[in-house]
Figure 1 (tube, rainbow, N blue to C red):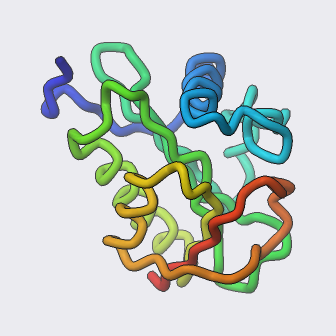
Figure 2 (figure 1 turned 120 degrees about the vertical axis):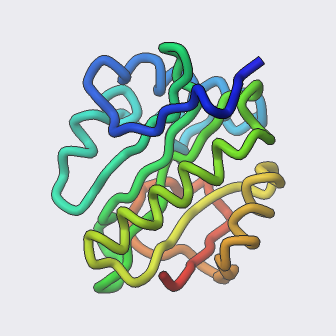
Figure 3 (figure 1 turned 90 degrees about the vertical axis):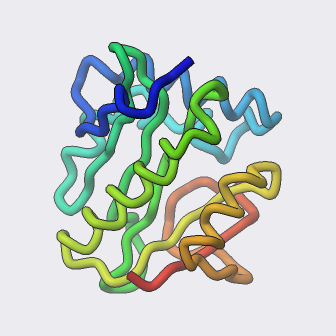
Length: 164
């Protein structure tokens, strides 16, 4: 059982790469989205630490007692409108869902995006991620009819945007 007070939200470090990549792929497999056109096959998934050394990006890790429970980031995806960043790679381990950890990661990511000067966030997802989509809706994300930017994740078919 994960006690909420033991949860630490911190920036990614290089030693997190293998664990967070494994967690992301485990979740995608759980929801039968372990396919091309997703972060499952994206080569950057194996080195998120380097990816998030990009200017105006950050990746947050949720950890308890040395175990990575999930992560969420902000990234200035190529092709997005000015002032817009992408909310990326938001994944939680099955045992950490429903405990407020996702909300903490999202809120930390929103604050980071504002601090970096972004006024809008875009995301790509799948209809199978019902709980995440409900959370996005709760936080004010609105559906779009088409993708924005050039994430390379052509398999995603839910697109949402939020004003900060």
